[in-house]
Image 1 (cartoon, chains in turn purple, brown):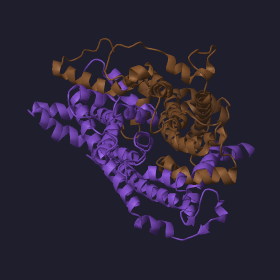
Image 2 (spheres, one colour):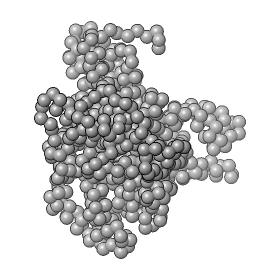
Image 3 (cartoon, chains in turn red, green):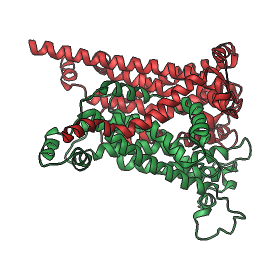
Length: 304
Length: 290
């Protein structure tokens, strides 16, 4: 009897520590944030002392031009960065999918930028973009060109931030698409070769369509992550000059610590979270649909 | 492996490869070189390849741990040394806790059928996407006013454990599924309880998964800035926080700051070289099947 009871309780015992931590340190804070987004709250107050203001934080946000600007910068940043990285990463994977010596060393070197701290990545790029001692301007000067205001002009600063992110994250797409390419059925590629397909035709009609499921998931993963970028930009420009590189997570940080408007910061976090949950949900649905399709295909095959 | 033959490629292809490698590690190399330079060399106009490498910047950063006192250093600033200790403690303890309770949870989700299993899996998947910036406000509020653990290492460790758990559970599931259930049944036949089966049979078999998960967990705890910045006080600051604090608008001491950046980057670089295969498995798991 007691053995049966322990057996029934076992899964819950195994789950309990993780469940408790997630409940108290992740789920509860998120609920707390949703509640806080309806409050007028500054960091010196306990939450009980804050006034309930209904939707005022949200209406204030949407009528605030600098919030709209920062929302636009976030979307622009995510769009530009993910597009560039997809093209470069997939292109490189198609190009380097060959039987060459040292491929694993190459992959190891490529994941380095993703592994080191974003703070350090920001530091490196801030140093390279430095107006006088940075390597870019030094090189331009020694070749006799004008120096470029990398981080002090709005448009250039946005471009610089994009370049740094492309440097850091293109390898991610590269590695995922390379893995996808190498797990493609060789029979399809071989068959197209026998039928006389050129290299380009193989890529466009055989390889890319077969890789598509992985590419879509990779795209969504990277898109979700691009909304989380914070430290690199914080170190490089801290959102400036003006608001040109102030993406949403930076603005949340500033609203909370500089303007001391916790309620408003919570409302912003809430909006960001909704965007991310929608994207995650899209990925989840897509995966389920893929699984269902694979199962149906298998069933059809078995019948035949 | 050594019997494998490789295709010959044309020289342009190798030129492209070399360009890519230079682009990938160039900035890291530049940071290393700068951290070995004196400020005079960094500021000089000419891009001279030849300079006297010096460990002086590292000595300045780590002066707290040195057994001798560098004679050029007038006053030893212990900030960085303290931050390094904090980062190590926070990183190691939070990784250990996350892995222990994460593996247990993943095991329960894979092996047992129980009420609410699907709900739990979907929620862990959802929680994976929560960015630190979203947690900033509530964690600051709760840790300060309700739990009273702001400014302590314990408080930071708790956030990191919570932040990493969903990912660890998710990635370990895929490894536990591959453990043959017959092994566990055999152990149970021999009279092992569920906890013995887990610790003595399952754990040793999923070592590669644990390696991948611990690298990812340690990396997040070691690199994270935002939450540590909001929660830490003077005595519990981590390395990323001190680096950002020492970045001022003008007059940055590039040599020393690059040395600290290098010290922060070294552990992840070492992990990458030791366990790149596991890291890539961890990255591709989920996106690429089969």
